[in-house]
Image (tube, rainbow, N blue to C red; front, side, top):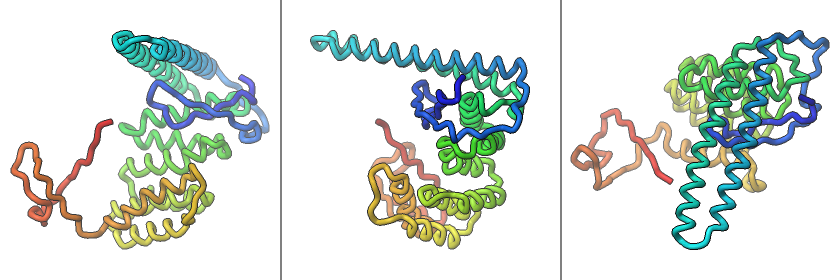
Length: 288
């Protein structure tokens, strides 16, 4: 696997479709002496190649099924072609996910410190990110370990930026150790560039809010919002941070706004104000 063919995974890790983008060779650290890799590393490389092949096959199958749908004439033919396309997507997603799981299992068996990162950066990067993503819900501490290893091994990659600003802070909160999470996120805020800082400060404020420090949370949110210019370029990540910050500033630590829905399931409809003094969990959901 040559260094200039290195790719970074975008965000859709747990589904079948994966988007990749090239990573510059100068983002790969140079080791003084390459470690000697073993059979487990070779097995992980082979499994990753199979995962890549599954992705390629999936993309081709999806494209062919979509072509058939677009060329279909008449309502019945279009309906049948659409059903076929959806079946192909489901089938290919299952195959890609199975190949991913095989790769992650093989990667987890290899000593992460035994990798020649300069020669196999793509495998190391994808392995740590996918392993962390799959662990995050049931084993958040394991996810934290994976993300920290990724930052240690490939600190300058563009994927490391996503891990530093998103994946790692979320995993830290999920561990439930909010004191440790706050210390680590505070360090990440200090290291962050101007684009990443508002989002990380949003997470820092959330940690303070969960700990009951509502005043500290509101102060952090306000400081983060001040870092975001009024006018932003298209696709600036700080626009997303602003969308998260504004409702937090308006709602966290403040009296809840009135909700007076006339349609309840399993109980008599009442306004939110009628339940003052009661702990409520409001589940907001949508379908699309």
